[in-house]
Amino acid sequence: MFTGIVEETGEIKSIVHGSKSAVLTIKGSVVTKDSKVGDSIAVNGVCLTATTITGDIFTADVMAETMRRSSLGELKQGSKVNLERAMLCNGRFGGHIVSGHIDGTGTIRNMEKEDNAVWVTIAASSDILKFIVEKGSIAIDGISLTVAYVDDEVFKVSIIPHTANETTLLTKNKGDKVNLENDIVGKYIEKLMKYGHIQDKNDNHSRTYKSGIDMKMLSENGFL
Image (tube, rainbow, N blue to C red; front, side, top):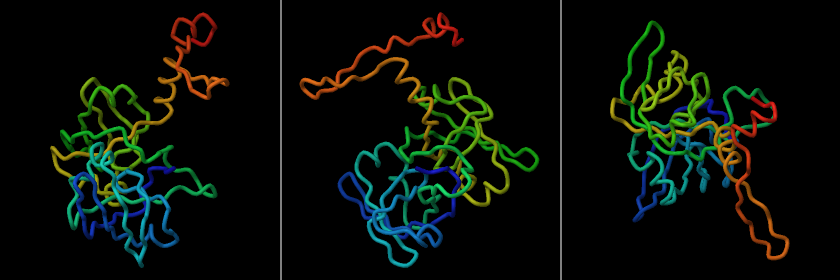
């Protein structure tokens, strides 16, 4: 579990490609300090497992599914990436709940400066946009950000100087892909509104059923 508060920008030192997978070697002086093999580190918002750690260098395997669903396949030697270790339970929760399991990618459509901030417009599929709400949270390349605008085609965030300086977002160009992870709460609510699961004690199989929860039911019971 992560917070979307990027700890540092690291650097891709090498990429070894398999037929559909890859092994990344990444330099990160902060995230390697107290990490050990097997720990989770978010790389541009994608939760990866550290397979080796030597000094400030770690490696991580990227499976085929992750390559298909993220922009990690577009990285090359020298690329800068946002890095964050898994969250601790003994500090302030500065961002929002980020799992590191991205929902897909978006495409940067525009960047426009306004006073001390920069508006970033990102186009995304309807499957992603349906979970994005104005003033809600979204993780872009692992950065916890507040949505300032959303419609049926794009959403916008406003980047303050601190975020610009501490992350890679404003180093990207129009047309570049970014990893997107929706707020996890909305996804679970949609699932529960449509379907539920029950365990059959006789054969240990899980069966799917319609939950019966809909807008009419919530209204009739005083929830709306």
